Image 1 (spheres, rainbow, N blue to C red):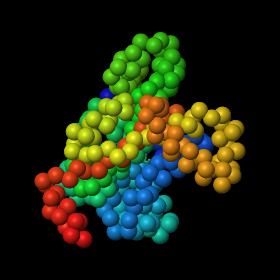
Image 2 (tube, rainbow, N blue to C red):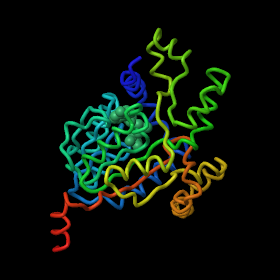
Image 3 (cartoon, helix red, strand yellow):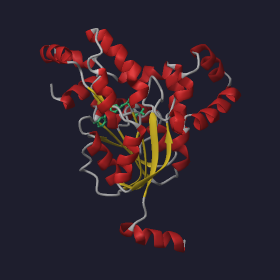
Length: 301
Ligand SMILES: C[S@@+](CC[C@H](N)C(=O)[O-])C[C@H]1O[C@@H](n2cnc3c(N)ncnc32)[C@H](O)[C@@H]1O
């Protein structure tokens, strides 16, 4: 089946599931950690694109802060939910766009101050994940913040799924080497006959190594200023302890600070969350000849 249709079916059927994820304590920590990375760059009036923004997990708050937000997603159901939530919250400024992160043709070059692509839309753009990075960078004037599936951190899950589906580890070495996670041939045959199965089965994706993602961003004339395997420390702590930490506001704030430091250590960059996209990069456009004018006016200011 065409991968695009496969992805749309999965995400269109997954709004409630996606919202329920927040009840998972590890995912909650992940969401809060990502927000801590995004929030410092939000200033009223800036133009933000939230590409693959889903039901607006971050988008609604970004708009509430006075940013000019465009929320793009491949899934009409996610967009509808985002619209409903925005309306309920009295937010009327968001521009909703149905589209694909690997093809942002509707936007001119460098038309956003900040482009976000959080919790793996780039990975789901597979096999066009490189194109997705090129597009995100193309439309950003200043800064991008992306988070993708962390290849090594997701390996245990790939093993669990493949053992469940085929009782073998035949594809795991290839996943480890290339990062491409496809449905096994046998499953693809079944999906062809019973297409609605795609609503329930986790779609194919590309999982990145930190070096791979960083190099791709550098190739787009951006300078990575922060890399973080979001959710690594939380993943290593017993759920019961994590719950106790989250339940106490003061301890939780301390914990988030520790995570920010721990998860950005070079030694753990290949790990990341178990239940979310565990590799985040913040990058800024290099100042070169094409934006000399801007540098000049910034210096004068
Ligand atoms: C895990 S959710 C993350 C949503 C949001 N960014 C967040 O962090 O809460 C992944 C989102 O990516 C969207 N998506 C998947 N493939 C996409 C693509 N190729 N282009 C745009 N959006 C895509 C899905 O519809 C879904 O809303």
